[in-house]
Image (cartoon, rainbow, N blue to C red):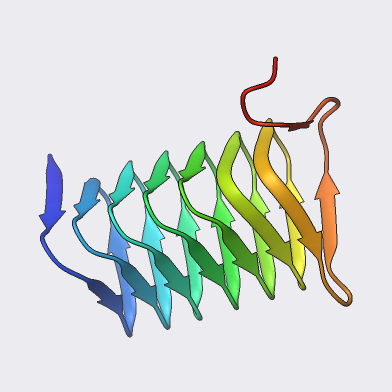
Amino acid sequence: MTTRINSQLDVTQTATFDGNVSIAGGVTITQTATFNSDVSIAGGVTMTGTATFNDNVVISGGVTITETATFNSDVSIAGGATITETATFNSGVSIAGEVTVTGTATFDGKLAAGSFQLNGGGVVDIFQQYAYEVPGSQ
């Protein structure tokens, strides 16, 4: 069963989604959100709280992470990603746009990204041989 949300999703308290979720707008997480099944988001995602994604995630917009986000399965981001705190990617990651890191980003799987920019004390850990690949290359 898929839960369909036809507008913006704002998580201002604690929310847990156990089934597949399809969101027609963007997502803002200011507290704690846990997604235990596939998630499809048509807009962008802003995380100023804590988010955990335990299954596949497809995001059509960009992602801004200013707190803590954990992705435990494959994630695809059509826009860029800005990480100013902590993001952990425990499976395959595809980010079409630029990845800007001023916090800590950990990639523990296959990684495809448009480009990387490290600012200030930004840290990127990649724990896979041949992990970085330019999109469209083989």
